[in-house]
Image (cartoon, rainbow, N blue to C red; front, side, top):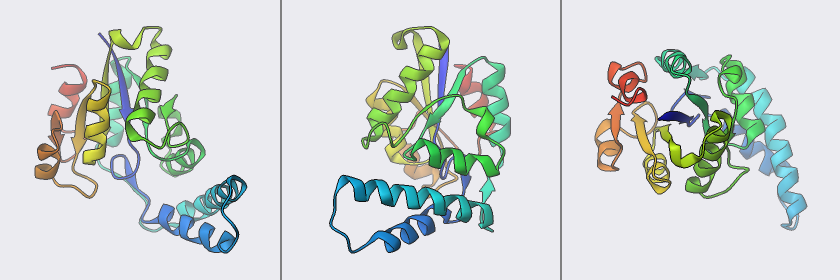
Length: 199
């Protein structure tokens, strides 16, 4: 079977050291007090993205986790369709990845701008990955790589498997209890690389 690998960003690939939270707080602060409407949401999002670029660029806590480059190289070597499965909007995801020189590693994704529901945005990413492989989704093995129980639920919600990594806010035990198919402490664990291969 051909493989679609969907990576979460925050807590899985990296930490931005709170840059996203600071950018969102500043964006709300600039726009707060106006009546809620769709245009207001767009304004907040635009301000957030502007602030995010500055926050990520100067964040002393920004860090790409150990093992990320290894698993990405391995996934590409397997000719997997390597994309994102993240609650970030697409432009925000690109901002976060750029500082770590990771933008060129992901050709597609499922994003928060596709759907608010985690399962549905993962489904969008899986469908885009299958299309890149020229196969129906039913002929693809989809692996969601994430760091939270939400990632596990979303993966299982579309019939995918979940490789969970304990680099975010949940430890190995919590991720195992959530039902992850495999839990590792870092993404270059040999078990994680074998899991990508279907072993």
